[in-house]
Amino acid sequence: MLEFDGFQGRRRLAASLLAAALVLAPALAVAQQAEPAIQAPAAIPDPKPIQPAQSQTAPLASLALAAQFAGDRRPIRSGLVWRILSETADGTPPRIVARSTDAEPVFSLEPGTYLLHAAYGFASGTKRVTLGLQGLRDQVSISAGGLSLAGSIGDAPIAPAQLSFSVFVPLQGNSEGRLVVDKAKAGELIRLPEGTYHVVSTYGDSNAIQRADVKVESGKVTDATLHHRAARVTLKLVASPGGEAFAGTAFSVLTPGGDVIREAIGAFPQVILAEGDYVLIARQEGQVHSRDFKVESGLDRDIEVLAK
Image (cartoon, rainbow, N blue to C red; front, top):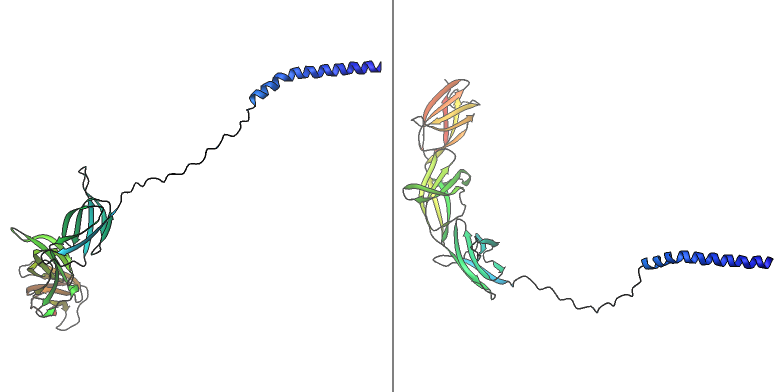
């Protein structure tokens, strides 16, 4: 009985396992289809040597430059500003591709056509060149010279700090012409194209002015001294000759015709005036005082107005 029951139990167990296997078989089949197949690794090809990238930069050539004064062909050793402009085939304006302030610069540029521009102060020279792979050495001629200005009263030089100069290019029908340089200082080297210029020298800040025409020659420095006829006067309002000056006095210097030349405020302001006759008016606490006086060239002195 017990053996029968064991046999029947084993039959029932086997039947259950068979049924479970039949139920799970489709799911296992689906799972096997969803699982990706493991592929064998593909063969790695032999590495090929990397070719270096081709350079897109064109070869450069050397352009060595120098400048000389027109006429005597002496080299220019200083004061130069070089600009190199490239010309384009499409007609667009040239563009600056290099600059230098060296006297004899050397540029490394792509072969091509260039416009050379050498500035020497207010003068300049230009030249068109074609640069090949073999390089090029060239010169630019500039028709220019230097101008150095000074001032004096008689034989006595005027302190540079008291002078300023304006330089004009004369024009037909215009005695003064077109302004080239303004407020130049005494002793300053002014580089100009060769030619004749009109120079205006101002001593102080009033009416002491002198004019002269000066010629500038290529390759030379022209030294020009303009001789002023003027003097420095010290203005005072006093109660008696030689007395102490009143502070805060307002002064006006006029021509005999009434034109105002200079105004100043203080106890004893100093004014530089051209040689000639003047009227001095002093105003102090609502009172007005005046006197006539004369300026003689080179005679610096006090001009006193008596408060009466």
